[in-house]
Amino acid sequence: MFERLVQAGFEIQFTNHAQAILEHDFSELIDELESALIELRLPITEIIGGGGGEAKMTQRLRRKLADVSWLKHNFEMRKIVDGVEKESISHEIDHVRRSEAGTVAFEIEWNNKDPFFDRDLENFKRLHAEGAISLGGIVTRGSEMQTTMRERVAQFAADREISSFEGLIEYGAGSPTAPQRKQMESDIARGMSFVDAWSRKFTADKFGQATTHWSKLQDRVSRGVGNPCPLILVGLPAAIIDMDR
Image 1 (tube, rainbow, N blue to C red):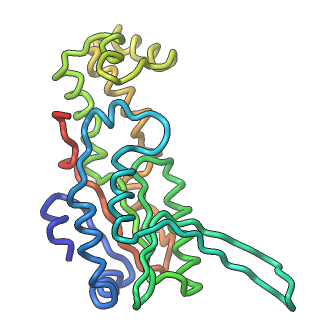
Image 2: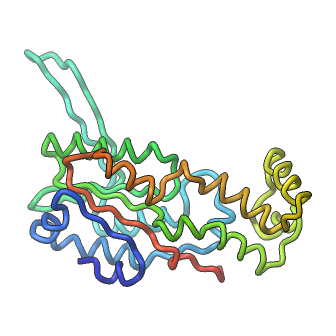
Image 3: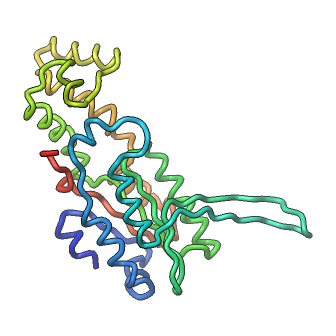
């Protein structure tokens, strides 16, 4: 299962018999997920120039999933006693795929604050307990992508011979904030190159340990967050980064 993804460097993990459930009850959905993920490409310029709002890569993946009916859905659960509503809870899931066998929920956490993992997993747990979904899935940055991000950002700057704040603006990386510039100038004064000072600060601020990536997701799952909902976890490989674009 997901052999093409594994060969391409994707990290795949199943919990609570999710693999068996997917294979036997939702076999028709396996190719939909694999086809959407295997085609993902991430230009380095999108990593460098991405500002506020949703990343372009995430938007592309969302469109691919939506094209095969993995659609956003808001689950509503109400508690009614003698005709009086006592409680109402809603859970919005970005991608929901329904079939005759049941329902699969899927979230994309490319680069959020890591507490979003807690939200997603707890939502899956509640929805699974109520019989609303059969299993849940999360895709995030894989471990190699996370650990080599600074190296790739530095390579972007070195390849383009960026050696000044003006150069960053010229190549779409934007201008560092005053605190960022101060830290970089301090690092440079201690002998660090401009490329190393910038890549260090850039990746620490944008893709730091407190963001959504594979090891943070693993931390939650190992502690049992989301149990007993069956889960499919997908880590995006560094190989999808296109250093030429």
